[in-house]
Image (tube, rainbow, N blue to C red; front, side, top):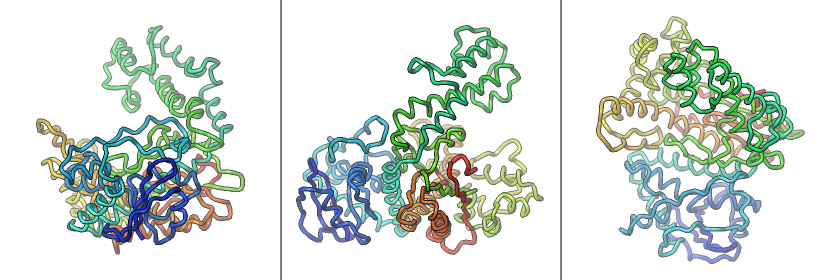
Length: 542
């Protein structure tokens, strides 16, 4: 059963039951309490159609209502627009409705600035954003869904695209659920980490902690500059220049190649400064409450389909700070990491039998080394990553030559993607996510090569993101009732569960990995193994 839902004002809303093609199966209904009606109608056979999961679902979760399936019209509109080379055009229901009716297309509303604790503390249950007026919000939503259904059915491979849509919608539900549940966070352990690395918190709010003050003094002395601000790349570059060293940037890999006594304290300063500003005491005051870190996940926030966050830095938790991610008493974490995911995805997509044999092993680089690089795993890794990321010079040259000779089908797969990108064309992931069109402007050889490197990797990275989303969607329905998905980062998933459920959770995740590979690639010999750790603290997983 497909049910379209819109919020109106207060707790009120409107509903309409639809057929799968979007045609009405009954009259529109005004409901006095939308949350109660969703709770009453929810079931395994119910799929909810709404404009935005991020806008509506957190409110339902706050009221204790969890749904099984949905169709997020905005996310799907973005996928369909992207497929037709219109990536980045407004994706709201209002914009979709205006396009079909030949009216001015309103821009998408700008998200509110992150405030911490996600969107789950809003006072009113429903505060619909102020957008361009449409004839009727429910009619516009239904019309948008029907148009999307027809557009997807007309695609050359609608089955694959439907799987992409299903994974994207499941991902939106999971993102909201993880933001609602939160990631367990120990303030005590976090304090221990910060004091160990930075010293005691400063007495004056906003002032740097003791260790940063000490490093700043050291760097000022080494550079003979009493006013140097080490957090400023421009000032640091000028300081090195005065010392006779012209550096292109202050990136860590550049600094490590420089012979100067300031390099070691500067590298330490950069790392500690990042921890202090991104995950320090002020960050915790904004984002952690009652032993939980509440991030705001943005599904498909990156063009490849990978997630992003709107504040909070959930996808960049430093290894040292992971010591603060501690399971509740009587609970544990099951941390699952899909190792070497992108090379395995390339093997499955390309259908190269030799590379597929390597992908059937536990360590794809070691197997590849045995197959083509005289046992040299490092060279095999250089070759495969170079093929995916467009590295064509230096030490990669002989490795790439061997890869091209032994695995021509896989090589040709990424080469065709690169050539398509260089010529200004569009490339697609395995399920149909489409890369953005080239930037307007003068075409130069350098810009064309850069776009070729982007599209070469896009087809692999975007497909890897699809596999990970499919894994998450399958695991969501197979986990024990008490288990909570609490973290997701590219190819890593964390489940928080009672200790006695850890075995069942691990089995569910491993099964989901196998099923995700079959759903995407059919009967491929490539395996997608998971490295699984059952730990009480995230830092102990690796």
